[in-house]
Image (cartoon, rainbow, N blue to C red; front, side, top):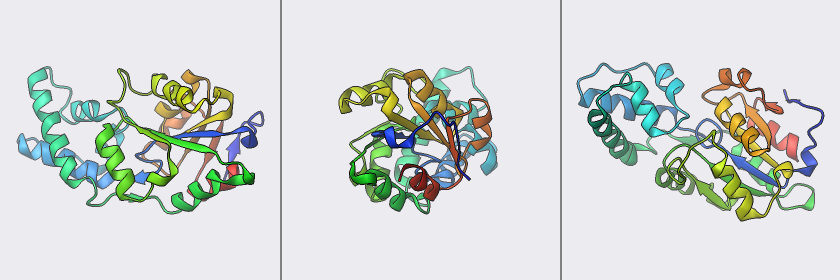
Length: 228
């Protein structure tokens, strides 16, 4: 069910900025397996899937820090991060898939009402695996740019990434919608002065109550309905 702030007019949206994990793709198992491979490497007990998924969203360094129990030894933390990234680089597409309905939703949104909308991706996942996954899963044609957690000096919810996309596309904040599955994405949109849309089918829908978005959708087809 679509729930939205009645001040929001979908027809004014000309740019959409999407989160990646938990919004466009279901990458949960590959992230879980990569974290647990890292933990095994350091003789640490593996973590349940739900716990690892709850750690996703603030970038790879924070994901590894949380999985290792916030160690004080920064050298050890770097070794953990390096191992995780190397393992994930090789296994990032073992189980990762595009959510059902995303491709037709993106196509419908892109060309709704005879006006071609622009779309971009802003993830806290490192940029190289983000771009590789998007290309491998056939989503590259939809996006004018793809940025990751190491593309800028700061990560979401800092607005720098979103502001960069606005500048590059020459779009205004009031005609831009940030779409994501967590409060991090909503706060990013707010910090950049954008409209915000939360999706409840992703990794962290429970966090949306912490920062309520302007619009909430439960499925990818509802995105197309909202913006079609």
